[in-house]
Length: 155
Ligand code: FES
Image 1 (tube, rainbow, N blue to C red):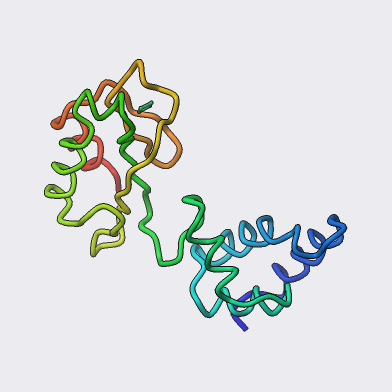
Image 2 (cartoon, rainbow, N blue to C red):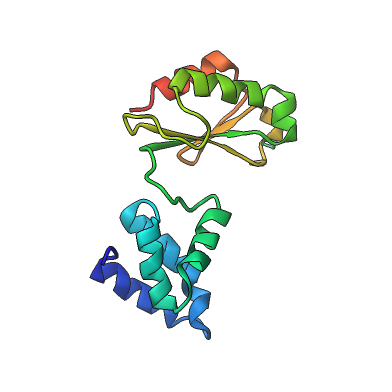
């Protein structure tokens, strides 16, 4: 068993809120990720047992939403917005520069576990493009040097 008894009890409370058990799948995945940091295939199998569904159905949900992770994550999430307005203001080039600077591709985590680099769709800050979100905080009107300075300050 990967999921703790405490989290399992919280899952049961969530299940009780829904007329159909499966309605509690998303809150369950939030709880599981809160405990374990990501949702591996082994964890998905355990969740699938709770809901009497196939593990692939759990992984379909995990991989559909970008708030769920199917692999270990870095201590910091750096997400560059690459939607059209940000891209028109250089976001894709900025992301490529951060990939080179950090030595990882988008979607990967630095070997020291410090940063997971990703991209996102529009975050509603187009007027301040290009921008990135780090651990929930927006950094706007970026250029490459400023973006590198910001990620270098992350510990
Ligand atoms: S396109 Fe980047 S914030 Fe809207």
